[in-house]
Amino acid sequence: MTTTTEGELVPAALTEDPRTWVGQHFLSVTQLSLPALELFLREAEAMKALVTAHGGDRRMQGHILGSIFFEPSTRTTSSFQAAFQRLGGSCLHVNESTSSAQ
Image 1 (cartoon, rainbow, N blue to C red):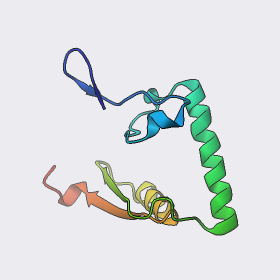
Image 2 (image 1 turned 90 degrees about the vertical axis):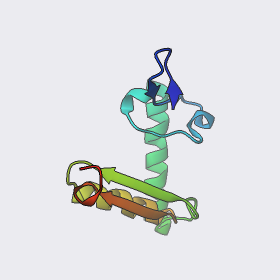
Image 3 (image 1 turned 30 degrees about the vertical axis):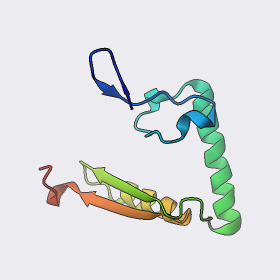
Image 4 (image 1 turned 45 degrees about the vertical axis):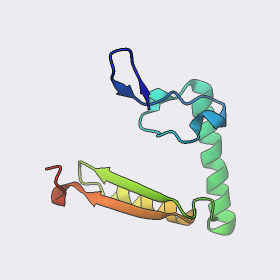
C-alpha cells in the first residue's frame, strides 16, 4: 500500500518487474500496467501447467491466505482456497454474515 498526498491508502502499482510484487497486496486490476497484466497471465499459464503435470507444489508452504467476501460466493471462495492449497498454503476464510463487520 502507498499513501497519497491526501493521506489516503491506495494499492501499490505492480509493474512488469516481479520484484515490485513482493510484499504487496493485489487488490485491483487498476494496479497493473499492460506489461504487468501480461506477466500475470504468463504466470497463471505456468501455474496451470504445473498443476496439470504435478498437482501443485509447496511454494506457499508456511503462508496463510486470509479471505473475506462481503457477498456470498461459495464458488469463488472455494476456488481461491483450492488454488492456494495446491501451492502448499493454508486458508483462513472469514464469513461476513457471522463476523463483527455486519
